[in-house]
Amino acid sequence: MKALHAILAGATMVLAACSTTPASNSGPDIAKSWIDKDTGHRIVRVSEEPGSRSLYFHQNAYTAEGDKMVISVTNPNGVAVVDLSDWSVKRLYEHPDVGILFVGKQTRSVYLTRIAADNGQKVHPQNELQQPTELLRVNIDTGAVEELGAIPAGKIHTINSNETLLAGAVAEREHNLESGPRNSRFEARYEALGPDGKPLSFADAKEVRINERLEARIPMQMFTFNIATGEQKVVHEATDWLNHIQFSPDDPGQLMYCHEGPWHKVDRIWTMRIDGSENQKVHHRTMNMEIAGHEFFDASGERIFYDLQTPRGEVFWLASYNMKTKERVWRHMPRDYWSVHFNISPDGSLFAGDGGDAEMVARAEDGKWIYLFESQPINDVAGISAPNAADLIKPAVLKATRLVNMQNHDYRLEPNVTFTPDGKWVVFRSNMHGPVHVYAVAVSPEVE
Image (cartoon, rainbow, N blue to C red; front, side, top):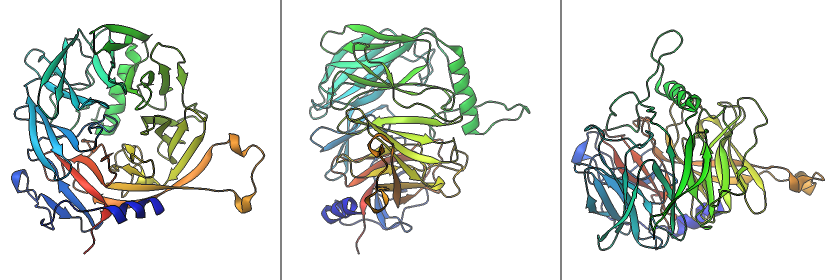
């Protein structure tokens, strides 16, 4: 594992004196740092306040300079800035209705929303938002606030690489996926009954509720918001459920988005130019019950990665598609390695995964870990290639290193792994000690 060894050789510890075992109770008694006895890797509790969260796995939380990270905080709601050199945390902005979108790729700004409560109830971002949303950006260093304007309805998903455009989607009417108030320890609340009238598991109830939303076929629009002028422009219309919209990290005119719904039922992953042209499907299903999803770009913006299963719940791959060369790589993994979300290091050499519990799609027997992966290609035997080898999918396998034991984590909260810009830490959110906190685990194992 040459790439991993290079990181290990250069890794340095930022905390010299730390406790070696985590406290079992919640609140301020959770240790600030410890070594996971099952993996040998150091874990740091980044957040100071219970209820803190890191950003969703494909939303950029880091400054371009790689020195700061943003997290959400509660009581009161707001955004905090983490200094990655020493893990110190400082509140930056507070407002009862604030939400974090992402950090810009060029300016040292965090983009925020303010959504007024609906009938006194906090608005959850998974709902089809029908109320006005104010858009703000805040300078991470000075705290200066700039009001960018507002959208009358819908949700902002992404920002382009030169920070000129935001993009989002809006539905013609509201459709709530969730059945009631959320538990603060979890990401969502899905409830549904099976054919026998008995409550379904969280994972199966989620499938039912998502399918109901898909079948509603609510007309939707994908739109851009010009940051300089406030102009809102429709770029795509559909009765497909438009979601997971992402700008390329490098090309300011390139979008990726999904047709949301049960993954075995929809053609999920699509790319499109910002003017609506070149609307193309990324992955073509060839097997019934084949699924692909939780797509994301690498740092170059050239490759799209996604969770691929052929068929669902049986054979597991981390697949990629190169938008320039058209090359496809499928990286095989055993059942226990499957993760709710995967991510890739900034230099493209390593992957991380956040694992999953026994109720999820992989039905893993021992999958509750934060993983580090390295991709190893499966090469031709004796240098003998098929005549059309260059046109075929390139196979590989993922080799795993366990970073964090997540046995006490409830996966109704998705950990959402990301690499720090230097590639030395994997950041995630967890409720393993009770309240939700932000944690980081060192890629390098602790050396005594």
